[in-house]
Length: 516
Image (cartoon, rainbow, N blue to C red; front, side, top):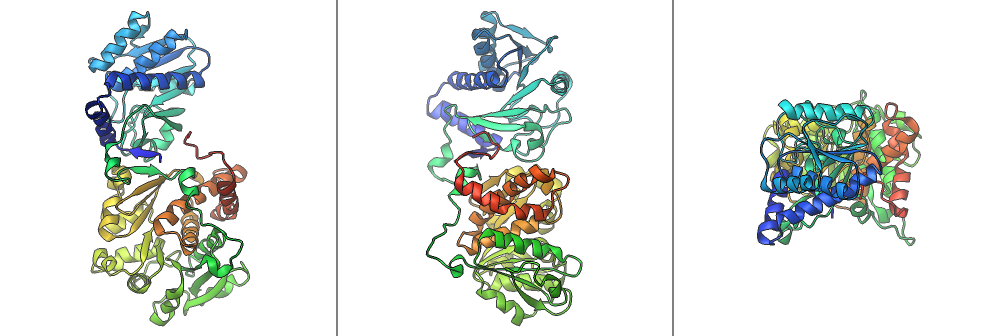
């Protein structure tokens, strides 16, 4: 399992390894510096290397890296401007200088091949100031001229918990996480500043795993989600793989449920039935001959009628809300399903917006009456409406934004942003596949339909969300190779889901982009 740690969790693990397991801190620093040196040589086989060192233990890692590179005969210089150092950092600075290594206060002139950023670690918060901002600006100026930048743990100036970047934060070509992945490289501004993210084991033990295997967030990477793929048997029939219902649509948003239904068909469910307002139903005839079509109410908008919503109760999974419009009727439909449906319910888009606006008694009493597994798939603004948290507060919370809400409501939340954070309040996984091209209408509809299909095949809503988010992200990545990031359509993503399934099931190479 590839774990993702907050700054506090990493400090706790460091302390446990050093104090309880009696592992010398200088030994861990030596391992970290060795790993950085190896990575630096991989990125820059020749030319000058500059290690930018702060005064903390990240700076100590940088001095070890510089010393090892110096002993290998590389042209290496350390840059150091901190006014005070940790004892470990000072020891390794002295060892570097004793060997004849040069420590400077500003970037050297002449051609540089690589800068190793060890200025600040995961504990950084706020803004870079004074000489530290000047150094970061100088590093970024070098990067613009073609110098590669390798950051240790997290780019300096990026918050280790929520990924929020200072105005002059360093932009890395690669970030090398020492021990475990750090939350800040994946959330907020982190992906834009971290470049390619890799990690290495340096011997740090995670203490909470001894009592709880779900104590830390973890990456929904290829190895993890591949185990979730529903198994297909030769001796089977369409009933083997479940029935899913897609319920949504309105005169204004007629395309959203169609995208969900197409993704559900691609997801492997045996039956996919699209329920629509009767007035827009004719527009769907033969658009996808594999779809079952049925009216959910008269007119061009969904109106709640119990006898029509009863039809949904026999399905293995139901996705509700895509393109439905915000109304008290949609709220009634969502509440009915929560209280009466016993399968796997995915609430998306206007089902969530309608609940936020019209569910007067609040969500907690309603979810307390649930009979089904529930997944909600909000983006940040939709989650803000459900919780009364501001988008800024949600972003500042990093990986923990949705966990208390999920636990309190007894549901699973897939919070959509630059990455997808999936939590049921007890365990949390993070999907990092995908592209900025998915920041376009329809992408969430594809995701919801795909997840509904996977859940109809037998996955829990948590596992369906993890696998679905991974596959939708990979399908978008494959499609972007043909369309580019500007021109990708949600229907392009749906059309490449088959390739995403095929490559996940049959290829042994890892193309997650996380360096594992």
